[in-house]
Length: 198
Image 1 (cartoon, rainbow, N blue to C red):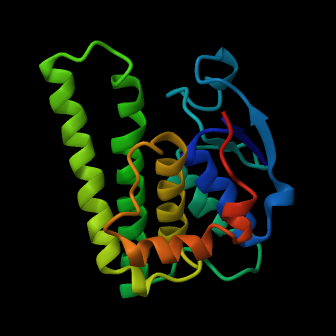
Image 2 (cartoon, rainbow, N blue to C red; image 1 turned 60 degrees about the vertical axis):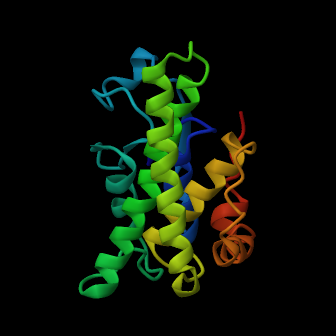
């Protein structure tokens, strides 16, 4: 399998963390490619990373689809529960973690541009989404496991991204339970081996 990646992408990190958690990271060839590189287009018409080329020649994108595909390989315990309340909780947490990333990644570009009122309102809107998501995670942090589901992996990647790109906006104050959970999981192989660079 070939994964188109950027070393700073939290969505790529989510995929590689899943591969590590599933014990199949040795089967994953990493292809460092920029999103403006025309070589990426045959793999993904959206020209985004992560994109995965399976051993069967099928192109998959983006991180929720790639992670579910990786979860279908090998014999390790599944990150995507099969059915019932545990599945919906894992998918809800994945959506919450992805939502933090979706609200944070574009904001990095916005702060580098002239700060007119529209841009300031947009930035504040995205900050509000992250703040509410962190409060929701704090409320259920004592129920989070040790990266046993796709939801927990996604949340850990989102918190890591906030540390990486927004250290001037610390998320830990006011979230002691979430901080304690993250301190445990950041040391586990799926997180420890995928620290972002760049």
